[in-house]
Length: 358
Length: 239
Image (cartoon, rainbow over all chains, first blue to last red; front, side):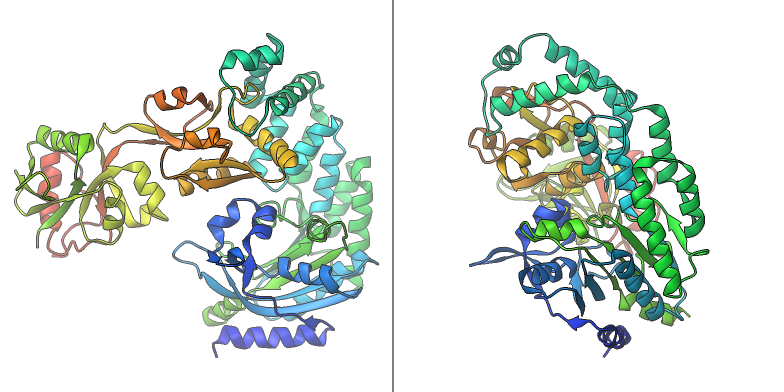
């Protein structure tokens, strides 16, 4: 057995000792669920194969989705699950395509801050002795800040949709402030759309083809004309959002800085952060020094929507461990039902590499 | 061992490749009948001509079975994962220009830019229950572009030919395809999205990093001198 497998076995045993029930999801997962969730990007990262009866299948790119599905199908509450096994990702030539993950997930309706602290403290204990530094964040605060912008519901929804794609998010925000190339493009488009009734514009453009109907085009034209009347997002709010997104400080200090912004929209999210820090302190984590980065988790962890964390050994490598809260994912996969959930994974291969280097 | 130069085996791309080398004092010619894929190079000793389909040249370069190859920069980027690790560009040859673009029906008066396409895709998915379909054969290039630009709620559907027809046939809502004049797009009542194309392709001379250069480095030096190109680094003979 390789060293990584030894580490994996030992970590899994400790997670089971912590009260988790072992789950063993299939390697082959239906592609459709993963594509609906992650979009076309996952096709570039996951191995797709074809089953004559079941259609497109993927070699599991992660465990979270099948674990959530299994829980939503017949899980008791609250529940703790642990798993260990290989995941498969298409990578650049220098990185492993098949590597181990050991994970721990908690599904519990009561005391989310306790569950957050439980998972983080467990990971900190399991990684004790390895040269890693922790980092934490909170997507809930970012989402609350966007949801609190003084603008139309439609603009807030557009920003929230792209919260995990920082480049497009920034471009949209700039446009909604009435600045940048997108704002100029949009102004030109709106001028052309105002020139005549939409029916005439469509008729003048040429013969219509395709599934996207004239009614859909008309609906978006109406949306664009309505949106053109919206006042720009206020500069002070856009700057506050920028300041929030670039915040990086020890957790208690970060909380104090965000409180000092006096932003009512994020107060409930900050109260949740305060409760989590209290629970982390009680679990033996020093929150005076625990690093907090408000943007952590925005580029790599698409489905996380609350507490996020990572343990990093080297900046040029993926985190040794990462995880977070994904309440919204359980709603997407639960077909109408949902349950608050938090968890994370450790990469034993990376740990084995650290031992070798040390 | 001779240095193997792979060039397109037929059509305008072959003729223009022959002309490009001829302008630089190298005469490339097919030998035998027009159906035989063999050829000669006059002007530099030690170079062997290999005639191949332009679409096979990227793979032959990556495998190191040919040392140099002429093909479209789009084909190299589409075919080879992490292409700069496999090949290096020696010269952009100034012909075979074509843009890889995104196009939508002309009646989409609300869609002019990628920003609009992204918003239309979100509304389309909410309305129809599936992601907006983009037909293409350039999966890698299109996906990487849309990912870099942060576009969501689309899917790529494969189309190896007559891509413009997929919208009429209701198998796609938009297309990503190569165009040089836009003629076919206009004839099919499609318009190109504003902004930079996904890729601006042209015929390019590539060198294979994985080929055996141990006894061909000096030939490459002579060829580079002849073509007026700087000798690429990392390709000299191990002498």
